[in-house]
Length: 209
Image (cartoon, rainbow, N blue to C red):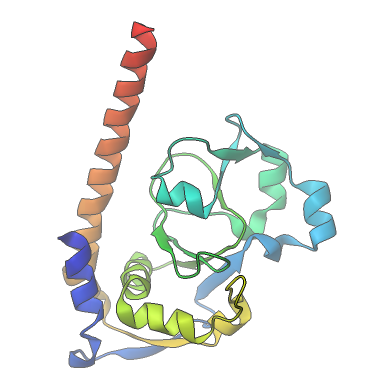
């Protein structure tokens, strides 16, 4: 229900007075894992672990699984090196290789996080802009826009340079607050409650074993 409402709002933007926003605007950060250096420097400086460590290394599959299960981590040194791919609550993450157009919103997990491979992320210092970009790229209109810059047959992909050239219509902050941010606040609460319940369930199972 919440997701359908978000898609409804973002698919009916022509009825709203909007301003034009380029995704290359200096007020936005559009970045990814490889923005941190060459493939050689990434190989030399990035250490990924299967066991809990300083920061989560969040892949597309992790978002799809609700950030549960077999997660990946990086240590503090790697986290410092990956300074151009730190994630914050509300950032929009989009898969840009393989599963192109899979859109996610970074939850509040009270732990450092970095974006994984084959994803780009968008960050604005204005939370409502992040909320709107998330709902927009989840919509039919946003998905069509992503497809317009996607290429490849064996493995589809798009790059952040082409992504930054896109422009969208942005409603006012007050409109986003009323029509989108309130819904996303509900989804945040539901997500956190589900994580808490899952943690309790796992602890009970451990005690019974």
